Length: 375
Image (tube, rainbow, N blue to C red; front, side, top):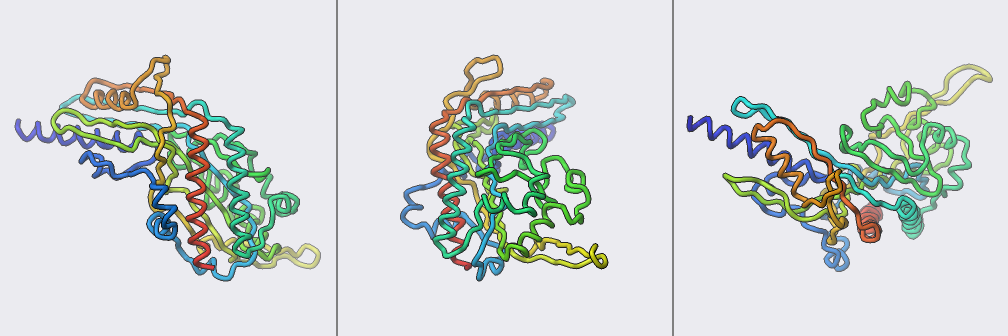
């Protein structure tokens, strides 16, 4: 009997910890959450201002840096800023003969899409200014939009903003993706749509008109390296606490967060090409060498200092504490049946937009510092 109680207690805390782990928009260190330590600190803006290179070395990594060396000309066919608007968690358990299942979700309400589009345009323009400051020629968005090959890519793309399932959380998460200055939001075999295989959504991946192969053609015809930018922003609860023998809970507030998974720059100019057919029907085909591209990405989340949510409401409109959904989920784990709870996180739009501009700019600076080191 004693051993059975221990097993029940252990299972309860494992499932409880998993639920706490999942309800934030981005998963933080599980060990720290169980111990009650705040492992994911908010980003220190003052420290960054004092030592940008040192902080960048902690937060950013670069892979295959040789792909950047000597780059003199760049085009940016894909520039995505993705704002997660819904994050969910679900779990099931079977404890002492009783089954239970539960789910909880938080949705951001009150985002101003027009202002987020302005922010995306601004970030793109700042990227271009920084690249030009490094002595790199940047083919503009207008030039790309007028290019016949890029127009073929646009046929498989979507306009900004595009409401999607989150690629970080494809089963339940939702997101809005913005692209700047009329550039399309498109998928490739290397960056597929959430819940779909590349073959299923694009047709044969080896097709000459598949977007990733058209990218290879653009590299050849423009005589430039390709840069693809993706930034993923969401919301997170950064504090956690536990009381062994009684309950585990989340406290704290939601903050603007930039995800390490998915936030990246890809840069490269390598492709394979071959000719086929005869006479007038002879054509040239391309295949992008995606595996040879340099990659600059975040190592850990960037979490803002100021809360971006004014209040949490359940779907009946009653005010609720941030942790209430977690408590309800945990009660279900004890074997009381099943439940689903949905919460609306009422965003403070000006604070959210200000934090977005500030912290996305920080990531831009750190990414391009790493790039400049490798030129």
